[in-house]
Amino acid sequence: MNQTHLHLMITHLPIIGSILGGLVLAHGLWTQNEQTKMAAYFVLIISTFGAIVAYLTGEGAEKSVENIQGVLESRIHEHESFALVALVSLIILGVASLIGLLVSVKNTPLSQTVAAVIILMSLVSFGLIARTGYLGGQIRHTELNPAELSPNNADLIDKD
Image 1 (cartoon, rainbow, N blue to C red):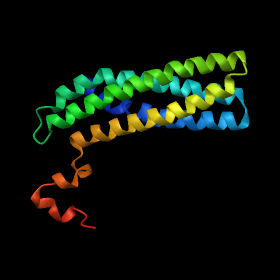
Image 2: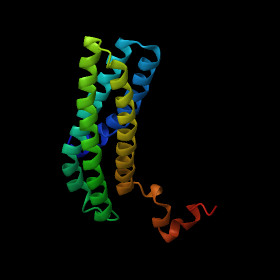
Image 3: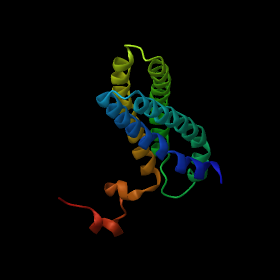
């Protein structure tokens, strides 16, 4: 397994984890169940580590595709730039989730407020990381860019 393979596998973790963790946290907040909230915080923290691994393996993935015909360097750089923003967002979410976990363990009155803030943070992080994934997908998945299909495939473009 090389960095490209690891990058492609791990990139899905922070996308799914950020929204799943937020939904589980919302359920924990709704039911006022501290164990559910703690489980959600763990999912969000694991998602942060997934984002870090995805970012660190991105350079290796770039090297393996940058010389392939049809791969646009501008798409790679757009994905890379947006990935940094998403990474920062997920790191902040991970740190906030660690704080939320500590607040839940101590069962302080701030527990509900912290959970609500982290739910909002998870939604923002999900939006950023999902956009990053979409931009990454455009590097090799030409079906995501119908305007860039070759003239031979023009009949595949939806004209509606």
